[in-house]
Length: 400
Image 1 (cartoon, rainbow, N blue to C red):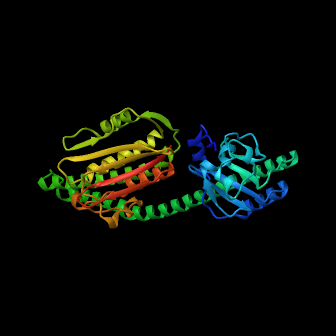
Image 2: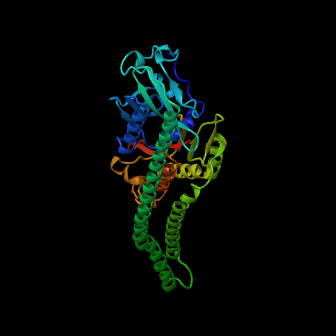
Image 3: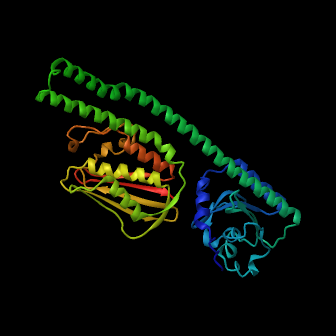
């Protein structure tokens, strides 16, 4: 048996496949109708819509065969996708050097005849095949081949319709989410923005009434309160602007960066201090990412690791790895940590958690929601692992 060759564009091909969200979905009549027609037109007992995953072939539709998947190394279709512009026809697998001892030939379902048309997307990736199978030698006429090709185009159109539906649903969910955020913002603005402004106004009035001739010690204290309130307001407004600018960052094109140089620049931006230390990989590593978005994500996580930290020597450690489809980052601090009951809600917009190390003050509840928004829009996810007193690790992935 000859194992199928892995396509040279395999990573991109799998990325395309996963983008359709087809694998392991329930049967659908539209696909089952196509395999039924393929079986009838080609006069074969079996017809399949096969998708080639990383280590298996999975059948979106299976007419005449009860199984839903087989190992990729045994798959006829995994051979076919290497020739996206051709119909792969095996008249008799028992005398074909590639398949004569294949378990799918020797045992059930006894694939003797096979013909598969690659399912090629509009961007040129072969995700699988529409294939017909017989348990005896068989041939297809030119008309049957032409019909099989036409049916394969319809399968791809169904794939595209599925993506359009998913995108529409995502857009709808985004709009609904934004409406909810606007409602929460209106509520927050009525309280959190007016409250610092109210403090400023009250303090100014006190200065005018009691300290016009010259400022006393008490007057200087009031000025300190005024400064504190204005700082709170400024931080809040900055956070809101940062969150709203996140959508603009997502429009930036991916570019190749050298990771250590990029992290060096972030370290310089944060500034040196004898009270904190930022550790990160030093080995040269070139990756292709949305640079402004990654910068914003890391700045938020690093600054949080320094700001919400009760240790005299604050340490933030950044780790990096990658898989076929994703870049993986982990940002670990040695701070106070986050209680389990708060670990889900800290990513919610305007959700503020009071912790002992902040002396009773709270953040503005925007930074981590910005991180979550950027990561998820870039095709990844963010997770938190933390125990009180032992710091926190924020892990996030970015789709390549």
